[in-house]
Figure 1 (cartoon, helix red, strand yellow):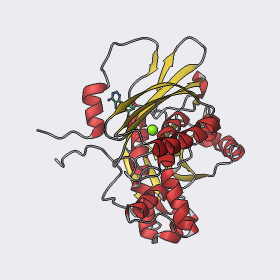
Figure 2 (cartoon, protein in one colour):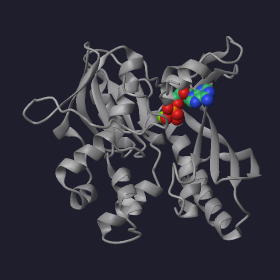
Figure 3 (cartoon, rainbow, N blue to C red):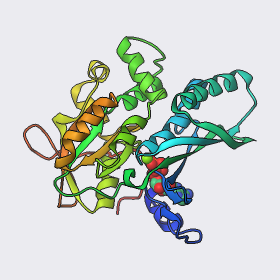
Figure 4 (cartoon, rainbow, N blue to C red):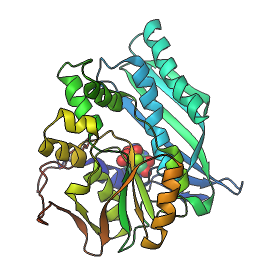
Length: 327
Ligand code: ADP
Ligand code: MG
């Protein structure tokens, strides 16, 4: 039997499932779905499941699990330019451990308060540790950010820095629970990602396409390119690397993690040249660093160039739950 990749599987089995409805403005395939409920705004909806031992280490702090389960969904709304409003929480737990639940809910609550989202429902069951969060938000149609809008000549940008969470995961899996300021900063990026909500909302009307970086830059920028029918050139030396990452890993590894490491939850977006000035102003107001890393080109595919202008070949492009067999 042929093994399908996660994305082939979604395309083959789920992208056309269900009835078709005229009020679905955007269905399967972007960071969130958009539905028109007749309020003038679009309702943005997304759901993400976090399994213990897969999406978070089995021994991750419970507060981190609570934070991250919400953060990864808020990040998907940020990538649509939407503002979060409501959340549902479905939990499967092996046992009712009061200490774990106290910490989990504290982590969830701190971020929910900060983001202004109300918990309005969910489900609680016994089983392997798994957390599914569904977030609902709102966006006016003119402010929507899709994966599919990138045009030839647009600049490719990323927020913040890349590779930190993947470095944090390596440290955690190697048994590091604390250490230097750099180690703690990387562990914190792994466990407590900050969804870029203010930036995402500010990019509406300015960016031509956007996605959040959950599976790694190459994989996620790849979705923008595919869905926009374009390609891109990215310059390796422009990738934003944090001081903690540079302090902790050697330069080649830092670049590898920045390209292929997941879990950073930064935004990757494209901006037409004439909107660049306004975008930089708006990012400054949102107090988020943004870095131009490349440009959209007509030739399909992603070309990563080193400082000598030579193409770099990646061994591994990002996290996938099901990997296709090489043909
Ligand atoms: P993200 O990383 O932004 O959460 P994913 O890569 O998980 O997005 O999913 C890609 C797209 O496929 C999204 O639009 C998501 O809603 C959709 N999707 C994933 N799994 C299913 C499924 N089982 N049924 C319907 N849609 C799905
Ligand atoms: Mg996403």
